[in-house]
Image (cartoon, rainbow, N blue to C red; front, side):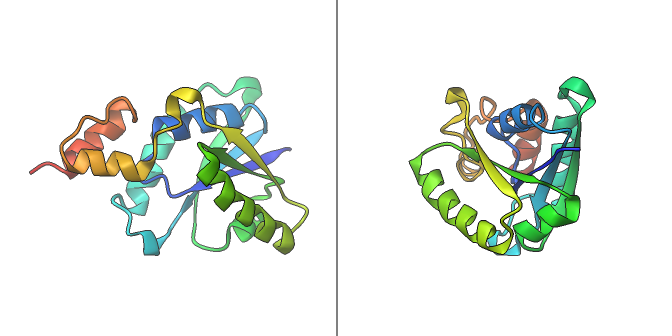
Length: 164
């Protein structure tokens, strides 16, 4: 069984994330969405909320060939999480050159820790390249419309979170 791990904080999950999940799920038999418990980032949504949003969005996707998508919170090293879930590949999305520079460093470190786990990059769809969770949160916090960047359920959660 080919198992892939797509890690992130997903705070919140965006249409860009959903696109990468959909496309990555066609490359593996099981896609594990690793939801990072990153206390340093101070997430807007707590872990349970983020996991719930991701599970709801993943359930809407049609995975070809009987593959599965599961959600797995983690707080350890990414490479240890990959080992824990039996992943042979880590999936990362790229939007721009700035993403590549950071990801390049991460791949090098992960390869030094375990060279049996490959990292593959999926370029964000051109319609989603500008979407970043950080910007979505900022726009929503300031009362802007983020409905073209997130699904309706995530949009509703953002509106509720920032309601006066």
